[in-house]
Structures are given as structure tokens and as C-alpha cells.
Image 1 (cartoon, rainbow, N blue to C red):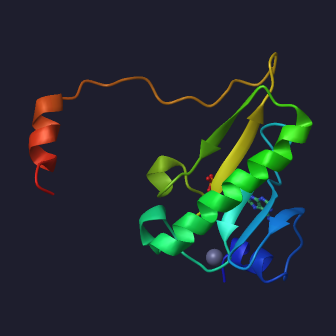
Image 2 (cartoon, rainbow, N blue to C red; image 1 turned 90 degrees about the horizontal axis):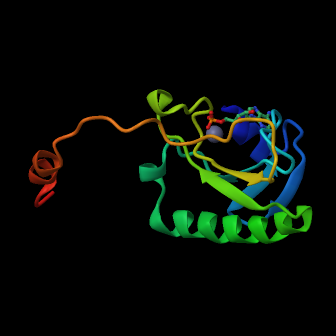
Length: 131
Ligand code: AMP
Ligand code: ZN
């Protein structure tokens, strides 16, 4: 069983911030900022595209609730991050969203998108047309 399934089943401890029937939110064990939270479906799905639509909607609702809660830490902004696949930086193979509150004057570098690369936009659009 994966580590987040074990957390969802209460088999290993976590600092739980929010819970409902389908979702769970807990503090990241290696926080990138004060209040860094992970939101997961209780059922095991590996990546975002595997989520049934209803579960994806439940997760979005939970994200909104957690952001409301985190507002009491007075962040100046926040990132919502979802990595899918090892090549995209996913380490735990159970779909999760990071909510990372951001504060003005943080010392750590804020995660940003990687630098732009050369891509033939018309070619990509052609490949994707009618898919
Ligand atoms: P990702 O790289 O998107 O798969 O992120 C996985 C995240 O899970 C990392 O930020 C880890 O710090 C976090 N993490 C791993 N194990 C635990 C745990 N037992 N409790 C809380 N967070 C964890
Ligand atoms: Zn799992």
C-alpha cells in the first residue's frame, strides 16, 4: 500500500488539517513554506487523469476549503501544484495537490515553471487537432 493510502487509513500519522468523506488534507512533512499542505483523494489513484470526474471535483472543493483555512496564516499568495509522473517531479505515486502559501520576503526560491523552450506552435496545434 502506498504511503498516502496508509495516511488515509490512519495507519501512519499525519498532521491532518481537513477531512471529508472522499478527501484528506495534511501538512507536508518537508514543508517548503509555513502551512505547506497536501490534499489527496482517500482512494488510490496515481495521476490526475485517472481521477473520476466526481473525485476531481471533490478535490477542488477541498482545495478551496484548505485555502480558506490557510488564509489565517496571512500569506501574500500561494501556489497550487500537482505533479504527474516521475519526469514531472512526482515522488509519491498517489495523486496529490500541494498548496504552498507564499510570503513576501521569503528566502527560499519560489518554484516557477522551467524556462521556455523552442516549440513549433502551429505544429503542436496540428498534432492536437481533432484529438
Ligand atoms: P511530489 O514530489 O509532488 O510527489 O510530492 C510529495 C510530497 O510528499 C513531498 O513534498 C514530501 O515532502 C511529501 N511527503 C512524503 N511523505 C510524507 C508523509 N509521510 N507525510 C507528509 N508528507 C509527506
Ligand atoms: Zn495510495
